[in-house]
Image 1 (cartoon, rainbow over the protein chains, first blue to last red):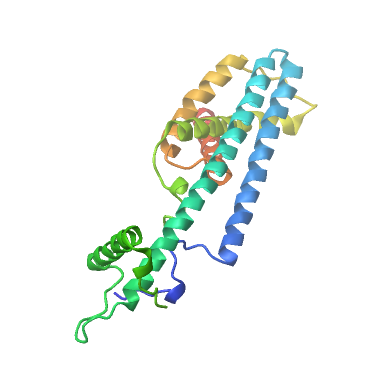
Image 2: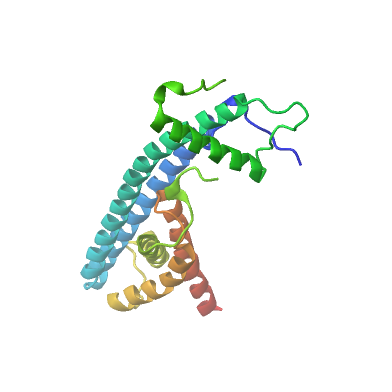
Length: 147
Length: 98
């Protein structure tokens, strides 16, 4: 089975372009639906409180639950943004290592490494470690990143 | 796959609680929508005490929360919990009516 590559701009992140816009749109739509659900439940409990006279605790709990969920979503969004910064840095390092790997001359009779093979990742990790140790030892002796 | 560490699957207590709440809201939606639809011409029906409704919602939503506890806390995933809570309540209603 052959695997298609995205060329030099290959990224770990798969969502790009209009797909990312679509995902954001769906996320926004779901958020609006969730808000509508919360509002409907609180309104429904209020109606029932007026009619049945005794559902006020349920109204309070529904409002509290809505707030807890909103805070949870906000917290998750902030944490995801922090993680995205770290991920970008790590991806940059990995891409640099991949470029170095691609620039490394291979024996003429040897097959180029398949991206799905364990050997590829073994070599990639070795390149990353090599990169890191070189940066520690002598920053001036680094090789070019190729293309 | 693996676009974001926070989107990876894995059960955590905050996720469980968030989806529990969301499923409870779905459950309440199923209970309250007929009332909202018929308001102000409310049919003469007897409703359970508020605490009985809350306890039954929390118990039924436990199942939904256990199933969805590995989903991240985003609006997109919470909507699925709401739908599951709604569906579980609808199942109970249908079974009782039948």
